Length: 210
Image 1 (tube, rainbow, N blue to C red):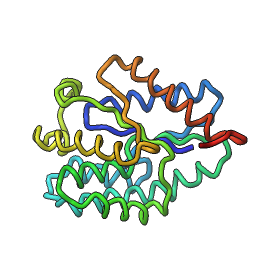
Image 2: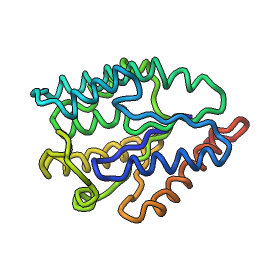
Image 3: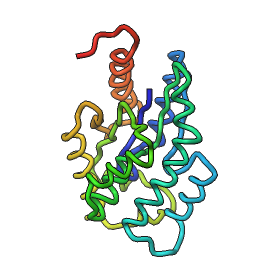
């Protein structure tokens, strides 16, 4: 099974990725964790360029750089992992981030980004995407230390992101699930466990699917 965890900067993704992976291992699953962009040499280099470089990078170029890093990650990591029976892949961000950040945030067409994502990933998409849904003020309070290029963008930009995530979840509720994430980390984790448990049960061999 392939699970992605999404949300705006400060939503708590890294914490929830760690807690989910830890819990899945305790349930006896083989778990592989990755972050997007990253998880390969090329991906980490592109991540540095996108988040820390002083170069001006337009929205279309940003999207394509993210897709290049993701294509490499799928080839090197995700696709081989998913071919191993019983493996659960948990990824910190995936194509939905580009749809929201460069689409709703920067004005590119979301549907075009989805199409480019299908090509870049060869159709390898999460069965379940969990979006940590928080209000902007909460996310801003959670951000610690120096902010990268994206984290430093204005509040109007981040409000568009929140709206984008909610719109995409409403458009595809079977695969994209909003998780209220303003409470304590353990409370959010419990909600995620419930959702993931249900999806694992429905995808198990012999289960009856609607």
